[in-house]
Amino acid sequence: MTSFLNELNNRILLFDGAMGTEIQKFAPKESDYLNNKDGFNDSLNYTRPEWIKKIHMDYIKAGSDCIETNTFGSNKLKLDEFGEGDKTIEFNIRATSLAKEAASELGKQVFIIGSMGPTGFLPSSNDSDLGNIPLDEIEEAYYLQAQGLISGGCDVLLIETGQDVLEMKLAVEGCKRAMVKLDKHIPIISNITLDQYGKMLLGTNVQSAYTTLSNLGVNVFGLNCSTGPVEMTPSVQWLCEQKEIPILVMPNAGMPINENGMAKYLMTPSEITTKLSEFVKKYEMIRIIGGCCGTSPEHITQLRQMLDKLDQTKGQNSDDYADVSVSSGSGATASGAEQPVK
Image 1 (spheres, rainbow, N blue to C red):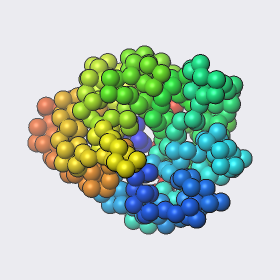
Image 2 (cartoon, rainbow, N blue to C red):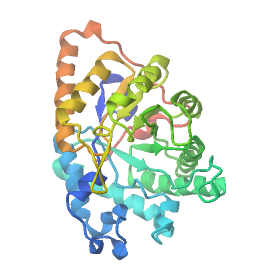
Image 3 (cartoon, helix red, strand yellow):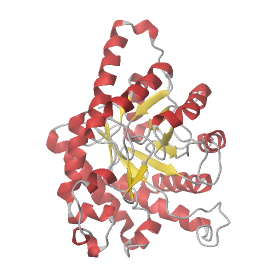
């Protein structure tokens, strides 16, 4: 199998959909979580591995080229909240193994993407609680998580749902330090999340976030979560106009609504596919699409069908499509992603 970055030159890659909302379909009880700690989704890698493998397998069957590990909350600071911070590396190795097993059992070759979510702190904030943390603790939290994901065999590290640019900068630094320690370099994707007005949680706009993170040498810059694809449109347009590094777009299934205290996502597979189809036809810099909260294997199935139809059209009208040259970036090289073990 070719490297992840080489694949981006050749075709648009399809990520999977949501993990959290798929877990909720199993109606987990408190007793399903490690030490009965309700909501500790990442602990299900140990207590209900069959659930997590099924979610991975459902997305692979739907046509995902890439599947994310169930490690969104497996940085040390989040694991500390559940008393498991000293097992950060082990948690991430375990999750990576489950994703690889799911692909292997189906006999499919997919890229394993190491998911790295926020720590729960906002180091740029003046908030006495959320902003009151030494920066080296945040960097260390991601450094340990990246070690686990790389050691487990991930092909790519995904820093996602970024809400604070400073935290994301520290995450990139932690990832790079882990690569040096393990002498294995793999691509880094950085995804920020924007509100419906195009701003991050602390007010940073997409232009500032992109400039900061692209200058750190990330290989792909993306948008995920928070809104549906419609609200992302102005930001997607600006990002693609830069024509510098590949762009990832992974929206929610529309803006969430509150129903009986629960977030509900109403955008259907055909609706989200229609909008993402418009994006990939219009913007050649979009090289990865997928779904975030509220998206399911049904959404991914329709996205797969859409991309396959575009590939057929590309083959018939090859002169109409431009090749996008993908840089390996200054911080991660393509060589480390040459041999995904699936």
